[in-house]
Length: 110
Image (cartoon, rainbow, N blue to C red; front, top):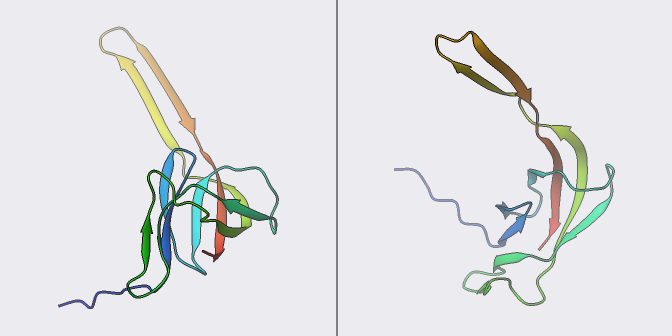
């Protein structure tokens, strides 16, 4: 049986219409935000925060006063997604590629 890893401190935050898990020291790839490598950013939309063994807060929808501090590691693009559309028996084909812009951040503190 695998051991379950329990973190003393972590949070769930929202940005770009998605939710991410934040653990101090972890790098996370999120939707693009403005800034350069090395800039400090704050996320105030914290949905859940665990600060100790039995201490946790659940927001409705956000935890009051909770701020997540992070730094931007780099601006990047995601993997290429191919969109192919066609209509059978009509020789109508369209092939498009898309790479989503993303920002890689490192969680400093919760």
